[in-house]
Length: 140
Image (cartoon, rainbow, N blue to C red; front, side):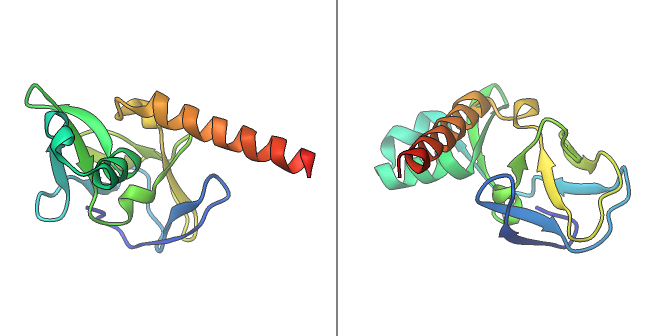
């Protein structure tokens, strides 16, 4: 659950992004898992879900180990729209912190590889999609 004011909007990185609605000083706690709004789903349960539900969880959730089980975490707020950056302004841990001062209006980013066991698949799909779009635009 975000602990700072945010909004979603068009991202220069990819699709929709999350933007700070206030200045966030370096070291401030930004996000923490809160079971009242965020959900953990055991990966082993996915085969019992309808295909659209599985696809949604795979797209908007992130995979982690929790209590020796592989799970998908689905954030119940804007956090599901945070985009990846190798130079992220949010660090990952038990609670996510501002890696540096973040200005109001700045897009919040995190390094998917720091916490998402499925990061490689997600990011390689994004590269494939962008490459396909680019090749289509060249042909048009």
